[in-house]
Length: 335
Ligand SMILES: NC(=O)c1ccc[n+]([C@@H]2O[C@H](COP(=O)([O-])OP(=O)(O)OC[C@H]3O[C@@H](n4cnc5c(N)ncnc54)[C@H](OP(=O)(O)O)[C@@H]3O)[C@@H](O)[C@H]2O)c1
Image (cartoon, rainbow, N blue to C red):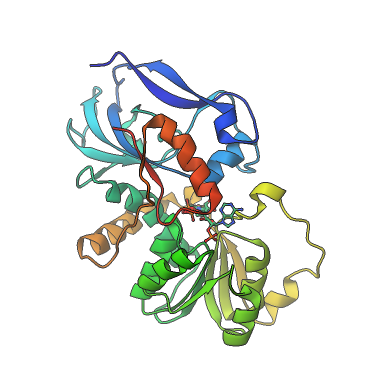
């Protein structure tokens, strides 16, 4: 048994995650009462969040330095502290609690983890991003069968699960993404209209083909895509804001335009924020749903290739996600 382990620590605010962080050694301690000790096998990459915390630019989190980093990981229980029930050595578990991710080992309260069927990385993607997708669509988007749904960053970790979940509900799915390979990928997932924003203007396509017809939109990009979705929202439509990736480099874009009140009230439409961390009461049911769909072969998980490994690989994976080249969920193998 190793007496120490490695983790990525954010030690100073910087522009890039790599520049503010370092791999450090920590003592591998025994779990205290109520804690379990877990050897992480895979971590999920949240490159936009990682960059925002590195820039101290997450409005809802007060970042205290130094801090360990990373959110979700799948691992195997090594031992349990006194009083722990429901877990035993050898169980595969997932945590989605910051900073459980970018570390070889995680020693934390047992209620930070959920058991998953085995140590395959698919359960990591489902228990983290899959849960986000269900909660965004169903709880915030209030999705109804057969509605018209638009999804931005549709080929990404979150997006490719959103597309499949909406298709399964019999919805007409508009998938927005950047690049021909991504477009082919989401078409293969069943999206009905794919808009490659590098080849077509999203606003023009939506105005021509979906004027006032989008019942639910899930947007994590913002900018011109948000504007186009808002312009074409249907009566009673719900535009769900789950991120603003395009603001990462420019800080929130300053927009000089009429307020959006008139775009909403004539249609009884709404713009709704989605922050999964504030919606924990919905996680167990969402998790059960995506696990069942996966077991039934109805929901697939695609991982970005190439698959990166080791804590060094986390830095590369963050940059790959930010480059916009990744397709599917980005994870790193920590075994
Ligand atoms: N609110 C929540 O609770 C919650 C939960 C989970 C995830 N999220 C958010 O959902 C989004 C998707 O997360 P993910 O981890 O699955 O990532 P991802 O979608 O796999 O990767 C990000 C994608 O966003 C698009 N993008 C557009 N502008 C970008 C920019 N300036 N920089 C980087 N990417 C840009 C790119 O795809 P295209 O070029 O194809 O558009 C890129 O591939 C992120 O914004 C994340 O923060 C929010």
